[in-house]
Image: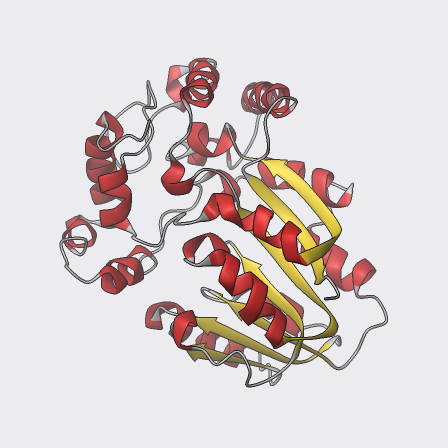
Length: 326
């Protein structure tokens, strides 16, 4: 059953106001879905607010994806998978501030990298970084993906870094648009949330999430930016999800089935997030620097998530695919 409104929705308003200011909250009171989506990526939250910012969590992903805690998937792509390749062309949709793409542009692998991003705030930030790094092989286009002409050019790689779950009509996008944009033998690469739409987790998942939360000492459950402790998680309601960002997880559960229908899997590495993403949201700042106590807390959370994943599919996946021959 879908949740329309939950207690987390009201708490999230005050938390976001503390972290981003009330102007950010007021930006959601707009009839334009596109403007509400843009506002979701306008301001950067504080360091360590989300699970993906914790170095120890990143090491966990590295181990799962590459087999080495010190090697992330960018290193794997440039030093292993694409080793010896040159003159390649890559396009990234929903590229944000182009952090990943900038790292790829610094290698000698790519002649051209194009970043397509809806938010002008993020494209300006990307352009500043490109100028600062004196890179000539990367450019940024501020455009809605739905207005992009997929027949304009052919690319060796199409990249979706935490962006594909923001797009609707996923099956059509992957079946026709993306394939038409790839060179023969080209690669679709994703690092994505592929779980339930609008973060509408089932009750049994929320039960395990709250069990995990209770294992964290209270002092590490103090919420960033506001005087509040995180004691229970109810999950977001649909109304808040749509108001906050109409594009968020709009067809996320269709991503992998659509890819598997039309692409051959070269590499697919599920790396969890089913428990950690919810539990560590807004309290992740406590774990930026670890002592033995904090490390033990995270190791325990990892064990809970690993046990959950033995019987349930992962919410996050890194994958490399190539179109099936018709």
